[in-house]
Length: 284
Image (tube, rainbow, N blue to C red; front, side):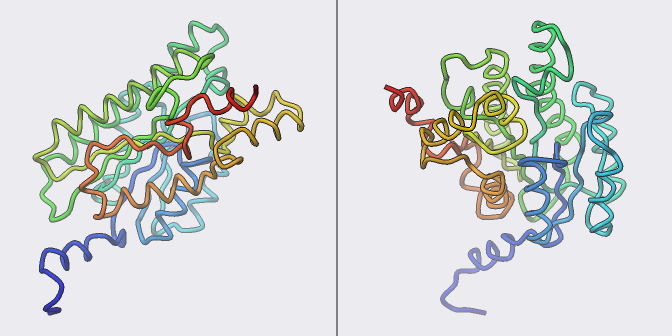
């Protein structure tokens, strides 16, 4: 035994590895979710991930699973359905025996919600149902399965919110989008308050302008190349955030090092959250 290293510190070091941990990632087919799946696998975890039932190609999803069949499984999910949520978690439990890390990444944005409804009012309802209520139901189902499990390490709930709604407000931001992300941040705080005496850690990450298909559809696709360059130059650090950068934060939160951050709502916007007027300031 190392006489310099306290026993509790040695125990903590053993718990920081994700080797052998089981993670459940919603929305793992693309964007931040896909990078998260890859990062978890690289750090030794086994991963069950979901894809949008009937909206993302099952054949392509199965190809991903076939690359690492002994440590990866995919499950079709409809976040507006409590039954679908419960079935997905039950399938993962049957396949892997437990879930140590829940990552609520699946969501729709101001543009991608159009795939669920044509009417703006119905789109708003879908936005809130998927982003807010879906995350709530997923957390509740996970806690029902795992809350009373006895482990010598902390289970993790990592929610994905957004700088818009989760941290601050931006003029012109779609109301239902910001509301849904604010609800996820509040849910995280409430769960953290209720779980302070448990072996379950809860966090939320609030990304800024991240280079995903969702952000491209909602913001970048309507711009000319010149407008896109100007927009990017006005962002903090003069660039978009890479999905892998958010995945790296998720890896840290999934590890044993993150427990002191229980209840934290992390601003992962490279400074846009603390200076929300940055883009308009530079435009004048």
